[in-house]
Each structure stands twice: as C-alpha cells, then as structure tokens.
Length: 351
Image 1 (tube, rainbow, N blue to C red):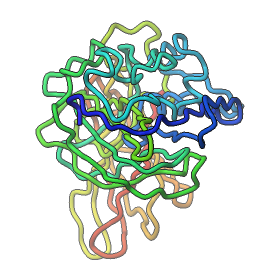
Image 2: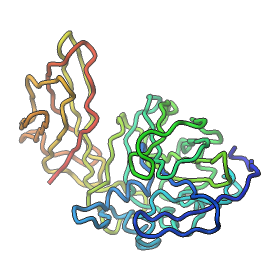
Image 3: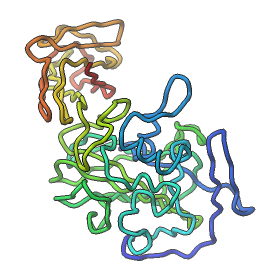
Image 4: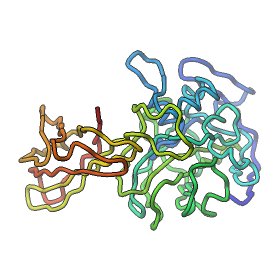
C-alpha cells in the first residue's frame, strides 16, 4: 500500500466539520468522514485533550501543542479529527512529502509536523493492545498502522524512510461502536505491537475509505518502555522553549504490575517513572478500584481512599525521582477469582 498504490474512485466531498462552529461543503455530495487515532492518541487528539478547560476553552499547556496551534491556528484543535486529503486514495510515499507526514500534507495542520515534546503514550513491545480510532463521521474502509524503524531520530520531522516498509497491523472494515458524531463514536480492534522495539517511536496511521478517495493520516508519539497505554504530556506545563528532541520536563507516569495472585486476592507493585529532564519532588498516584476489589494494605506510600477512589502519596524516602528514574510502592488487595482486573486509569501528578 505504501509504495505508490492508488485506488480509482469518485472524488469525496470534504465537509470541514468544526464542532459547533463551521461546516464548509466543497460540493453537493454527502458529508465526508472524520476521525483520528485515540489509542494510542494522535498529536491532534492529545493536544485537544491537553487544552481542555472547565471553562470550555481549549488552551494547550504542552509546548509542542502550543507551537502547533501558533502555526496552524485554533481550528487545528477544534478540528482534531480532520487531518485528511480528499484526493488521497490511500496513497502514502510519493504523495505525502517527507517532513509532512503528520499533517498528511494538509497545510491546515502543518504545525503538527514540527519537532517538539509531544504528548506520549507508553507501551510494551509485542504486547496486545486495544486500539481505538474516532469515528466522528463514519465510513467503511481499511486502517493501516506503521511504526518507525529502530534508531528513529525524533529530533527531525518524520520522513518515509523513518518508517518500516510494511504496516505492522492492517484492519479491514471494522464496525463502529458508540455514538457517531461524538468522541464516543469509535472503531475498535485488538492487535499486537511489533516485538523488539524500545524507546521513542511514532505509530503512523492511515485510514483509507473504500467508498471514496478520502484518506486520513496521523502521528501517535509513543514510548516502548513497558507501559500499558499511559499518557504523559497532557495537562502538564513543560519547558516553554525546549531543545529539539528533549523529553518533557517532569513527566510523571505510573505503571501497575501484578506480581502474585491467589484465590481471592493479589499483590502488586506500582512503579512511578519520571520521563522528564528534571527531577520530581514528591508524587501522587490515583486510580479507581475495579468492581469487587478492596485494598488490604499499602507500603512505601501514604494511602488515602474514598469509596473506590484511591490515592497514594510518596513518603520521605521515595519522594525524589531523578530524571529518567523511577520509584515504587506495593499493595495487596482482595479480588474475586484468580485473575484480578487491572486498573487502567492510573494518573500520576507531581507538585
């Protein structure tokens, strides 16, 4: 598919749906598709999340997201699901220029081709993962996921030679779940990441419609470090003037690892990781207990709990987490059966 394949089809309508703001119809055809990778999140989706505020404004805190909006304007956030080419026809290399992969060569999103400290999703190479792709406007088609080669250099804009030649995952016409026209409308599938990957990478997504030539493109910044889909760089203020390729300063992430199980309970370690360039001075990890679980004890951390809402704060001897370092605490819990549900909503914050 990447090597200059093109499908012939009727030119699709491009309807620029700006949620509640603008609809621009280029011809009289039905509305075009809209969507973007949500897990692992694309740059546009995670920057939109980064900018959400209780007042309803969208003002990014992440420096890379700020730079993208400064270059491409506010609509590149409100239109996070519209990184598309109406004439794409599934084309990739030879159609989208080097250095413009993340925008799909669409000038309205050129800010997302920049080098910077983008929000990142932390993953495990070779692991199974529940992918999701937003279906703001749903249409049939194929999804292709590529990953960068070993030795990928994040300090330069993404080029075709940075990507593996073949997709590591292809999905053929998945079904939509949830409410189309909202963030809940999603294509979902389960697949495995490639093995042997470590460190920073980009997962590049291509959604090729089968009922038109419209094609969507997107970059998801990931780190293969043993994570389970945790996201850093969203809602955190990082260095306002970062050097290209620097990791975000003070990014706190928590990874939950069940170490032993028995009938009716289990023990787990929670590893607190600092993926930033400056030390953390104290941390707090929060999550919601899965249904039916109760905590027995927590060690190397101070527990606060209200119902199923759990918060564990650092103690004196593990409060300091150096740049690219980690600390941990342990816990035991009661859980129905012998295969405890894994809490997936851990958040880690640092003062």
